[in-house]
Amino acid sequence: MNPVKVIGIVLIVAGTLGLVYGGVSYTKEHQAAKIGPIELSMSQKETVAIPTWLSVGAILLGAAALVLPSKR
Image (cartoon, rainbow, N blue to C red; front, side, top):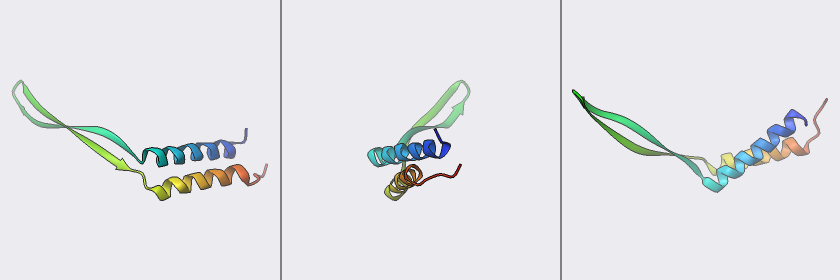
């Protein structure tokens, strides 16, 4: 399979996942204080939003990579 076609499929899948989920969440841990053997840490949930236009653009680029003929 042509590498351009594989990249097109990956872009379509990534764009679809971006539309479905809308963002990525992760937990960030901070060390608040350390006094001798006692350690205090905090966890904070962070979310990174994936813009809709970026997801749609990835799908369109992926579709173009699959549809347009590639030179060999």
